[in-house]
Amino acid sequence: MANNKIVLIGGGNMGRSLLRGILKAGLTSAEDFTVVDVDEGTLGALRDEYGMRTSTDAAEAIVGAEVVILAVKPYILNGVLDGLVPTVEADQLFISIVAGVKGAYISKKLGKNNPVVRCMPNIAAIVDAAASGVSACGSATPEHLDIAEELLGAVGEVVRVKENLLDAVTGLSGSGPAYIYMVIEALCDGGVRMGLTREVSMKLAIQTVSGAAQVVRESGEHPAVLKDRVTTPGGTTIAALNVLEAGGLRGMMIDAVVAATERAKAVAEETSAEASEDA
Ligand SMILES: NC(=O)c1ccc[n+]([C@@H]2O[C@H](COP(=O)([O-])OP(=O)(O)OC[C@H]3O[C@@H](n4cnc5c(N)ncnc54)[C@H](OP(=O)(O)O)[C@@H]3O)[C@@H](O)[C@H]2O)c1
Image (spheres, rainbow, N blue to C red):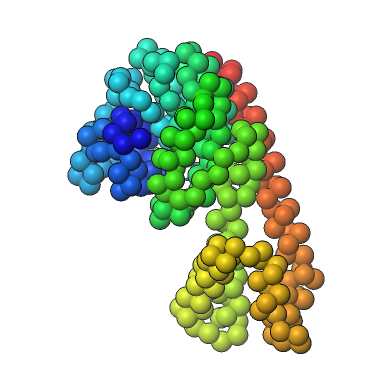
């Protein structure tokens, strides 16, 4: 993958994270990386920090590129794709992180049956700890998927799924950080309720969530086994687990993923309908 020419369209939160991760991992050099954005201030700051090329003209920037990463907001995408039509080449791989827009739609708009890989990263990309799903769409081959996986892998873990399961990825890991933020906040409040300072409580809550996840990852054991191991008969943990079960914690988490997945499906349908009206 090294030294493939990459163009990133959209230098916002996710785009910047990808840029940083890809350059840090040495997957391409700054000279072979171009960022396109509408904001000169954003581009100037990125040039100062990373020294790569920048442009406000996407159609010109993609000439000669092997990979084009789409990282603009969904409502901007149609205009961006329309602008690329005059210069796009059929063999250019499009990697889209735009939520809710199908790969087939992107390929159709570009008009040359381009390979498209759709990705759903999450906000933890900003600290190289994203959980991302990737799907090959249309003419995309396993080699195209390899490229997308390598690029997204620069900012975290990547799994391959069929495109129809990307909404489930959105429901679990795309929206998931918010669920865990609520858990951290609630644990912290529990500590404060029992007399710990907020500062101490927050430190303990964050480390508990991150340490527990690390144990699951490194031990490879099922969370239920790990839970049983720390649950002493008649002890403190089982008293708390009793409360969590009575409150339906696990059912609620499953329902939350279902609700977010269904919402992602509905948004995708709304977006596709709007997009085809515009097309
Ligand atoms: N944030 C997440 O956690 C997350 C997770 C998964 C997927 N995504 C997807 O990632 C995409 C980007 O999200 P984000 O949070 O990074 O958004 P963002 O911060 O708003 O970044 C989008 C960038 O694109 C720029 N832009 C606007 N119009 C443009 C154009 N015509 N050509 C080139 N650049 C243009 C924006 O500039 P201005 O700000 O000046 O308009 C902004 O810098 C979205 O489609 C979102 O669905 C985000």
